[in-house]
Structures are given as structure tokens and as C-alpha cells.
Image (cartoon, rainbow, N blue to C red; front, side):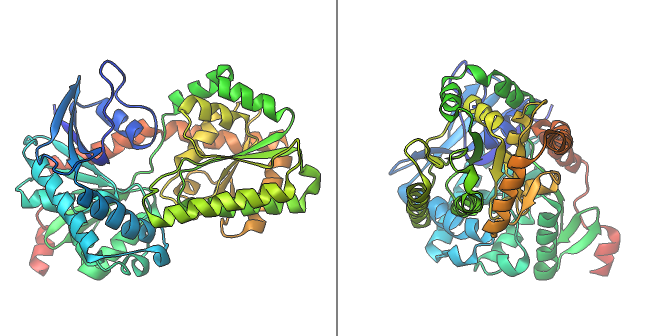
Length: 473
């Protein structure tokens, strides 16, 4: 049987004798992929050392072996904090004005991908399937091909792929387009993302469309299609069902008493629209003074990438906004916004989602956004809450029954909050049921299985140009 090799920026190594990974994000997706394969998970250990060993540490955990490399301070600064998160991340999220490009950072990005490729190539076996994850590793297939690796290599891009007029503002855009074409299969979250990347390759690299999502780029065939990522529906619903016994959930509910709860859960990032959401909540209370004291908004926002200057400024801006709103509206017995910067485990989040009458998921731009899916799955079957969802989140494609809003319009968001709070039970059920059924069908197992089936097909696919294309050339 084929071995699956997953490559990601970070690797989550389980404690010995424990489950494969803790629940959440990429870890859940990897867990599902490995459920059908023995394999290897390769990537950065999360450690920074002055003189990292170029050979990875190998750790065995049953069916899965983990191979991790440390990074030097310079590698971390240039590859991760620099090019990946100060240049690629903002451009991919349509925030051109926030992009910060430097040649040294881009050189570090290329260097770390080359380092990863050299270490990984030594571990690969002829029948391995290689699945690379996310924007940190776009050049990895190209580097592996340079090492003589001819295995099927797939890539999944977890964040948006912008239109060419946005992506091409990045000075390294041409290099990255040529590099991504060395993957056999490229997965994106939505059909618009697929259209953006395909058009970019056709217009800039003169890729030849072959039909069915396949393109010929410089004599090599690649296929681009959407694979919207799902969540562990069964596990998350079970966590919500049991959450009533959780101490934090019980204390939160006791503190709310009869008040209705609005909830937002996001990593601290300018793409998530947290300050704009707070302004919308402020506008809601201004327009609905009778709801003051009757509604509480809890925003859970663990800090991230605090070493990146833009994130430090965002943290200050959000704290200032919370203080201003609570200072203007708050009363001795009521604080309108409860802002929490610690991370909570899945059982707590599942319980808070179920308790919330309204889930506010309003990113300015998002590849998918799994919080939207978790909120829907966590709801009570008899009395579900209402999801207010940004039309610029990839999840909006699968969840049209949500209240879709423009996150740049605080008045529209405020009105959606009001509509959600006053929505009758019958309408809430009518909106929730089709979304919940869709989440059950299109869960994380469905996502991983579809991608791996597609990648397996490249074993027998002749990757050389079809005769008609070769003749035309």
C-alpha cells in the first residue's frame, strides 16, 4: 500500500500513547488523511536554534513517523515572519497596502524550501504520495523535482488565491507561478480561487488548457480544482452535547443569566475583521438601545504572530476599541463586550457556540473559515442559533442559508445582528437544517478522501503533453 507523506510548515507531534493530534485546523485534516494510510509527517519542529541540524529528527508514533527540522533565527525571520507572513499572507488576502516585500526575506523563503526539499528527498520511497500544505511551501515541489523526485506531489492552499491584478503586485509572483506548476494536483478552497489561479497561469505563463481543470505549463501537466475543507462533524457535535458539564461553560452561562449571547472566535489577524465587527456591535446597540443590558458579545481572539509589527498594532487597536465601547455603553452590572485573548479547547468552544444565539463570522477575506462550520454543527437540533457570515469567506459558498453580510459595512452587519436575534424559531430551523446536513456530508474525511483519490490518479497518468498539444507546439 502507498505511504502518505504530508509536509506542512508546522508538525504536531502527539505525546506517546496519546491520540495522533489535538483537534483543530490542519491537525484534524492530517489525522483524517492518515486514517487510511501509513505515513510520514514532515516539517518545522517549531524550535529555533542557532545551528540547526540539516538532518531531521525522526519520531515514531505507530502508523505515523514524524520528521522535524529546527530553524535558525535568520531562517525564522526571513522565511516565516518575513516573506510568508509579511508578503504572501496580506497579498493572498487582498491587502496590498499591508504587503512588505524584501529580497532578503524572499531569499530566506527559497532557502528554507530548498532545505526542506533536500532533507525530505532522502526520506522518500518510490511509491510515496506527497501532499504539501499551504503558502509557506509553494516552491517545495519545484525544489523536490530538482532533487530528482518524480513522485506524485499534491498541494493544498488553505487561504484565498487572489485575482491576477492583486497577486502580480508581489515582485516574486512570476517565480511562484512557475513553482506551483510543478505540482501534479493543486487544491484550493473555492471555484473562484481555482479560476483566479488558472487565469493567472494562462495569462502570465501561457499555460494551455487541457479540459477538466488540467493545464499544460512548460510541458508539464497540472490539475487545479476546488476541495472545500470540512471539519470533524461527529467529534464536534459530541463535544457540544457534553459541554454542559464543563466548568467554564457553566460559569459563563450563569454569568449571562437571561441575556442573549453573540460570539466571535478568531485568531488575531487583520483578515478576520475583529475591529470592524466590534464597530458593528457598537452600531447595533446604538440603533437598538432597548437591547442594552440584554445582549452580551464575547470575542475570543488568541494572539498570533506577535513578532510581526502589523499584528502588534492590531492588538493595540482592538484593545483600544474594546475599552472605548465598554466605557461608553457599559454599566456596573453589564459589560457589552467581553474580550478574551486566551485559547480555549474544543469542548469549551463547542459549548459556547451552542449557547450563543448568534455566531458572528465576518472576516474581511478568508479561504474557508472553519469556525462557521463549527458553530452550525454545535447547535441544538431543536433551537439552533443563527450564523452571520461574511460573503467574502470561502464558507459562504457552502452556507448560503446563513445571513450573508458585507464585512466592510458596519450598518449592514448591525442590521443582520438584529435580524438574527429576532428571528423566529421556524426560520432558524429552516436555515440551519440544510447547512447542518451539508456539513455532515462534506466533512473533513470527505475532503481528505477526495484529494487523495485525485492524487492517486496521477500514478497512472501520462504527464507528458498530449499528441495534439505537442504537435501544435
